[in-house]
Structures are given as structure tokens and as C-alpha cells.
Image 1 (cartoon, rainbow, N blue to C red):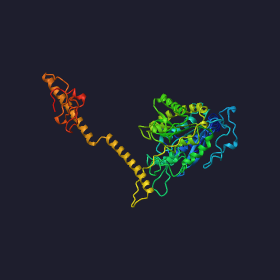
Image 2 (tube, rainbow, N blue to C red):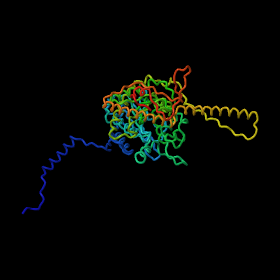
Image 3 (cartoon, helix red, strand yellow):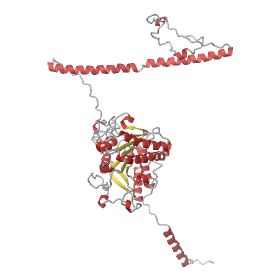
Image 4 (cartoon, helix red, strand yellow):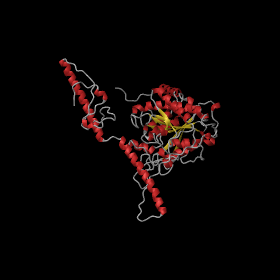
Length: 525
């Protein structure tokens, strides 16, 4: 029988295993990943997953990436910004002679609610403007803008070796989700939701359009609370726009190029949006937009439109962030990029997320290079004042009913009011008569349709007769026919130049000239 006693371990094997473990530990150093990396290129993520990806980038590339919390939304969600600054003193991959000399007091992190004078975020040793600011997710239903902004972060941080040219020249601030409450609501409840989620007091309506809430001719924006583009109670009444104001006021001294991502117009636009007048440097802005357009076209052949915001949209837009940055903060360059999902709506299929993100990055990178070249050409200090927004026409005066006799002064006032009212009424009558002349009636449309059906019937009968004649062997001879009107419709044209049509009954079909010459012989009506 075999003994049930356990076998003794060989001490030589223990030492051999310990040596193997030490050698493996020396050969492969342990890699510590604090946060797993989400997939940002092939899906629409939740707001929680977006924050998780931003934290992953900030921890993985901490030597040139910093994460800031700009503020909180109405539902207590964070609005975050990511700074990508390759040329900084903490970047260990730079040689010492290229590192920027910055004071340690300027490295205090950005705190929510800080004003422009507290906790400077801008490195005061920077010379000249070199900041590119990209924001997305202002409108809740435009999901593709958020994934495109995350793709820009991916290209600048995780693939920095391929984009080192722009990283050595420029600093980047990216805000991927400006409106987190509306974004989550559009993902879970209503996919077409546009505004934020702050309710209005004493009403049942919820939300304000964040892109109409900036202090740039805010009064001329839409004031109806039930509209999808409601401008808000006052400028910067929303927590999301106040958070953006804080970060923009802070980076304003070094801001070079501002880009706002939207969908879905497949266009690159420049100010002004509140006015139809052109800017002083519209040619330079147009060349900047054309550089991105040609880059995208060379990448995959997609054609973008370029022009001013009011021109391409065919309407004025007041209180937008692009006009605020360009007009109030006096940034040298500011553009709006409408992403290409025109045929697919605001949320294109997941299969197209990566394609749209990559082609947009090609255009954005080329525009950043062009903006760096234009930094010495555009001098906003020498630019004239901004144009005023268009003034709406005054309302038509109303007639005042008076019971008794009026004094001469009152009579003159009433006469002027009546004259202006009659003029407005006459103008309305003229416009209504012009509309009546231009717009066809339903009866005329019905007559034209019946005439078209009669023409088709004539052609069908002619084809049948032609087939019969070809079978019988007697070809039909075609000749031009002149339609003779009845006697009631004839009148001599002045000097007896023959019959002239003065009208046509509704039952008589209309024959166009091209059909009259092709009718076969023997068809009479």
C-alpha cells in the first residue's frame, strides 16, 4: 500500500522559482493603469463615460495634459475642459532648453466659480496668441459633435507623435460637452431635444438655447419661451454659459482661434451671425475656412460650403458664442463647423462616427496651421466698430374710436393716424392682390391636370391608330394642324389680321404647339 504522507518539497525547486520570478519582474516592469480606456471612436458614450475618458487622458499623459472643471449644470453635472499643452515646463519629453520657464504660483488648478482675476490659468510668460479653443455639445441632440471633439482629444493626446507640428506651435482647450443635462435627456427621453434642462418659473416650459444666451445683441434674439431657440431671461442666465464665460475670459489674452462644432449643415462659417454685414477681415476668415474645406475634400471627397453665418443660414442669429468670442472678446479668428450628417439627421449611424471624426480632424488640423500663419496679419485693434443688428419694422398704427367731437389738435392727430392706417391698409391690399395674381387657384390647377390627362389620351389614341395603319399597310401622313376656335371666341385683331383667341371654355382641352404639329391626320375633337 502507498503511504498517505505528503511529499516533501525540494528546496532547490523553491530557489529556482524565486529566481524566475525576480528575473521576470526585472524584465517586464509593472504597468499601473488607474482608469480603463473607453472606446471613443466607434460609439456614442454617456456623460459618465466621457468624464471617465477625460480622466484617463489626464492621468496617462499628465506631463502635458490637464483637466479642469469649469462649473456645474442645473442637474449638478460637471462641465469639463481639457488642456493639451505640449510646450510646458512639466513635459519630460522636451529638452531642457525648450521647456517654458513658468512660475510655480501660476500652476494653481482652475476652480469652479473663479473670476477672471483669480487663479490665472494662462501662463504669463507666453508671448503672443497661441491658444486654440474647441467647444461642442452646446445643443443636446447633436451627438456627433461630442464624438468629434473626443476624436480631437484622441488625436492630440494619444497620437501626439503624428500631430507634433501643431502641438509645438499651439495650445489646445477642448470642451466636449457644454450642455450635459440636455445631452443625457436626449439620450434617454427625447432624441430631438435641443436646449438645456433648467425649468422656468411659473411656467410648464423647460430649457434655454445656450447658443442664444451670450451677451452679444441678446435683445434681438427670440423671446418666446415655448420656442426651441429661446434666448433666456437675460444674458448668461444659464449655468452652462456662465461656465463658458469664465474659461473664455481667462484665456482671452492668448486666444488665437475659436471653433464651435455643430450639426448638420456640412459647412464652415464665420461671423457675423446677428448681422448680414461682413466683417473687416472676412477675406482672411474665408481663406481660413477654405483651407479646412480643401483638406476634407482631399481626404475623402466630401464637399463643404463656406461663407458667413447669416448668409448660409439665410437668417440672422443673435446671442451666439461665435459672435461673442469674435465681437466682445476680440479673438482674431472664430468659426462654426457644421458636421456632415445632412441626410442622416443629428445622430448618424455608429458606423459613420469614426469616418466623420477623422475627416473633421483633417480639416481642423489644417485650419489650425492656417490660423497660426494668419496670426500676424489680422490686427483686431485697428478694426472699426461692430455693425448694429437690423432694426425690425415698427408695428402698423391702430385706429382710435372716438365717441364725441374732437378738438382741432385731436382731429389733426386722428387724421395723421388715419392716413398712416390707410396707407398700411392699401399696402396690405396691394400685397394681397399681388399674391392673388401670382398664386394659382385650385380650379386652374385642376384644369391643367385635366388638360394633361387629355394630352396623354390623345397620344395613346394616336399610337393605337398608328399601329392599326401599319398593320393595314396604309401609312398615315402627318401634317400641321391649326386649332380653329369656335365663332364665339373669334375677334378681328385690329386690321383684320385673322382670328385671335379671346378666351377658352373649361371643357376645351389645351394643345401645346409641340403637340399640334405631331398629331396624326384624322383626329378631330
